[in-house]
Image (spheres, rainbow, N blue to C red):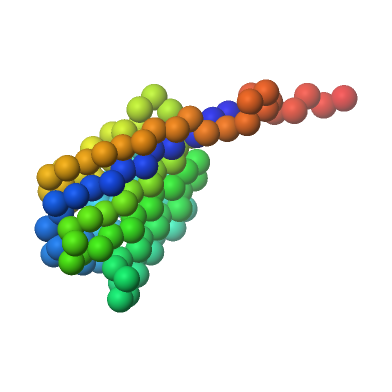
Amino acid sequence: MTFDHLFADLGGVPGGKLSDTEALSAVMLAAANAAGLSPAHPPVVKSGPQGVSAMLLCLGGHVAMHAVPDDGICHVDVASLRGGGTARRSIELIAKRLGARETTTDHRRRGLRGAPQGPEPHE
């Protein structure tokens, strides 16, 4: 079993969109839906002197964001067991909803090589 793990750096995002904690919660829920993930609980979004951090734990993955509203930047991390580009759809949705002018991504397939792909056989 592997994770589809995508990291993105978003730039040129209006600061107001990155500091609106309710709107970020809604974006994270929509992003989880785009990746086919089921949230395990509501998003946690916290603001502080170093910016905004947000996390949504899901069954089979997560959506995380770290933003600096004053600089218009946001780092996004999406992991999904579903594969098939679902994490990419999630990143695209976030970038569009936040109005990012630039996006760079780094995609990784995560998992142990040779790990069992199903339930362990019983003896």
